[in-house]
Image 1 (cartoon, rainbow, N blue to C red):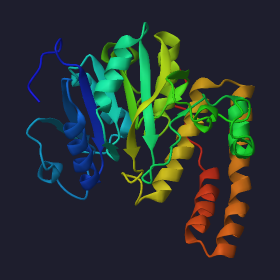
Image 2 (image 1 turned 180 degrees about the vertical axis):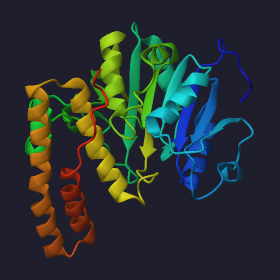
Image 3 (image 1 turned 135 degrees about the vertical axis):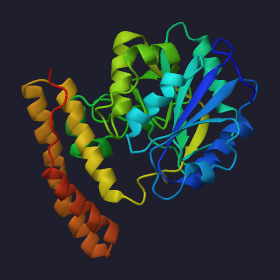
Length: 318
């Protein structure tokens, strides 16, 4: 990958890493192997991984722009560090637990270039076994808070009214507009991302992608799902060995989204629905765990119970 000027470079690929060196190396190797007829750079930001020195762990670092943080700045802030120095016309925020199997970068680039408006684009994500993974969804409106917390999405999987993942369950094969694409693969024009200030760093981990899509659609254009290419998303990254970290931060991030975008009674209703959903899951998962002898379900029940007693400070008040 030759050095390029800002005008010549097509895409800046930004990958945030925390431990998971093996997955990171596989991800980088797959990008290099399958990205053809396109100019790009790889920017890796390591959030002070305690399990090793990334300078020693990267297998092929000669053409990688590497940023080493002296603390874990979180997913949003670390991605923004990459965005600050990105030279590409477009930026791809890419999880370190993803794998390319075809020329996805070029295909998504060409699709973005064909649009008549500025857009965030997400591609099809696959699980390790090749099944379709939920990667696009509607904003967390009050209706979606209700339906997702009280299992209505499972009862009515293809209903737009009851399921924020309705497009995924219809298994659409053509490109279409959506409201949110996951941050595991989020492709967007660099200049517009900078004008937005990148991710909101008040989201430490989770929901920064939802917030970014929400703000982008209000300021610049649309959010697109492009299912004509796919990558694997292995869900084996930084949080796999830290389940409480995952559940705690997922809950906090959801409440923060409500704090930022919902006002007054709307916020109160959303918060109460969310907590009620957790309360319903605690005994349900506990009983299932006992009956099946499933330790994971018992731990989930415990984590949901702990989450109820956490309330993040509202950092969005002016």
